[in-house]
Image (cartoon, rainbow, N blue to C red):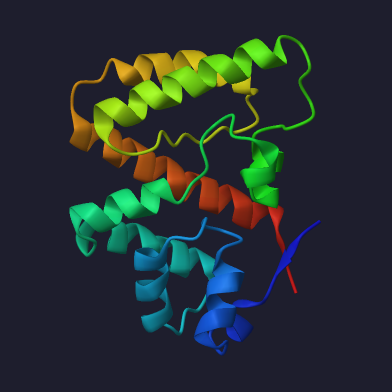
Length: 171
């Protein structure tokens, strides 16, 4: 099991080490991490995640919000481009049936999504296979409102971070 430093230790880290440590919860997202770093100390990781939610909703510019969403890897991306947590979340290596067809369809849908909305599709996989994400992505492509899609992606990004926190043990 992967570990993260205690919140007390996190509060004392240099900026570089803080960024490295917090990337276990969030994919590298500089605008968000910068504000989290400057808001220390936190009394718990839950407080940090609640603050991240607040920052995303009220302090980031629209461009920064897109940058935060775009920090996440594409669903179905090549394993070499994924963080260890993303590999586990996307179930890489677990599904073999129709793998190439699933990856090709996800690639097509990701491209359509990014062309339509201007940012990456982010979803809280929550144990679902990549094949099970295809209908979710197809449905989300039918949404007409870019702002709604961005909100969904940011909400799911925080769900991912909260889930990662549950899976990581604290040193």
